[in-house]
Length: 222
Image 1 (cartoon, rainbow, N blue to C red):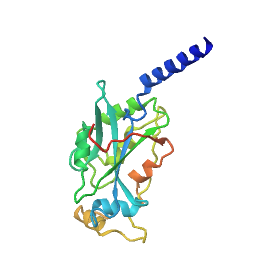
Image 2: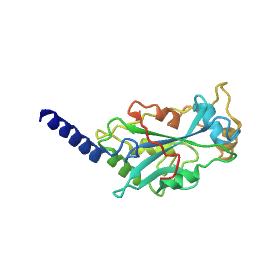
Image 3: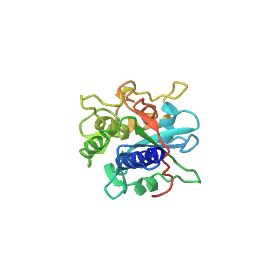
């Protein structure tokens, strides 16, 4: 009888946890989706320039998005991109937008807050920025946002501190040189490369101690 009671208690506890937090292998509200591409992809382009400054290994993390799961279990994405600005759209839209050419495949890495009790509030914070334009200059401002800047401004603790820290931005490659793409881009904008100004990037954000890895796989449409 005692063994039966303990088994029942274990099953009940599992059901309660599943009901509160959702399945560990599925997206949950507040998860962050990091998108990586092979280092050899997009040579000379923006993704290559990002990777040369922040990338590690064989994968360049080039984008960060916020996940939201609605009451019906449908996954949504809130992120900032050049194509959409700050926008909320179905997960499948993001998967299509980041479909690579020439046989290359993007990698989607999902990380979860170690303490996600306020995850829904962070997502609601992000929704306040919907409709803003993409921050092409990467400078701090009150009108536009780039991908990790959106996360930084949305994931704010109850005491007002951001969960993800800023750091001086580096635009140079491992040899200390500025990739031609950045020289061209900021030249078009009529400004110097904002070397050393505070900011965030997907690679550093993915390594933040407030996050933990998950077993979520989303390389196929839900």
